[in-house]
Amino acid sequence: MAIEPEDGLQKDEEVKKFFRPSLWHYTTQYSLALLLLPLTVLTWHFLDYTTALIVVLSIGLLSTTELYRRGHKFFVTNERVVRQFKFFKKRFNQGTFDLVTDISVNQNILQRILKVGTIKVNTASGENIEFKGVKHPRSIKNSITEAKHDKHQRDPKTEKCENCEAENPDSSNYCSDCGEELGT
Image (tube, rainbow, N blue to C red; front, side):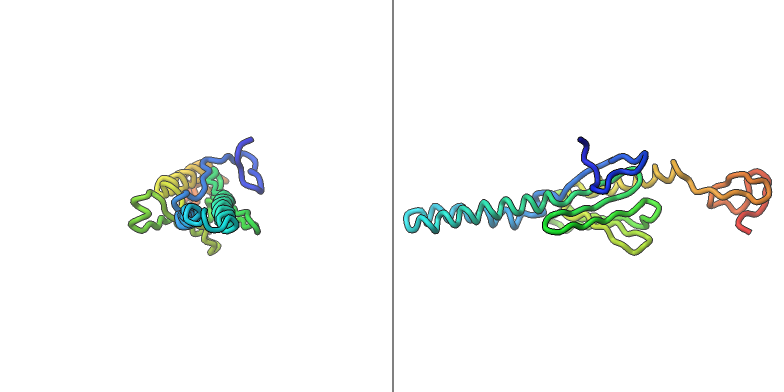
């Protein structure tokens, strides 16, 4: 079974790119969990219960962090961008390409070195869809831009001439067939 958004795919829609946050985005949580393990060596000879508790905490933190990371699913289809999150609660954001107004990539210097960053997709409805901590964010931004461009090429908006009923690009001021002014 292919991975697809929870709400499914529309007719003729296909997933172009699927991705999740990078492990680097959760470095702090993973590091904390792994730093607890050496404490078990220090407490091994003192209290067996303390050692067991530290091991359980470490494994619990590692597991919870990984489940939280995997709860994020990001999709670029040929019709829209989708961000869904499912852990203790569900969140679902999407923006169709006709509403996407701006796509930006944010990276600090450490993120540039690690090749991770945040992609912000702004829509005409005012909704901002963020893909936080993703690997190769510029490549993903290019994928979104390319999918949006392909969508526009497949489904160009047209306007029908009232005089001769010829289809013209939405951006035209005059009919390409009869020369009549459009949008009057």
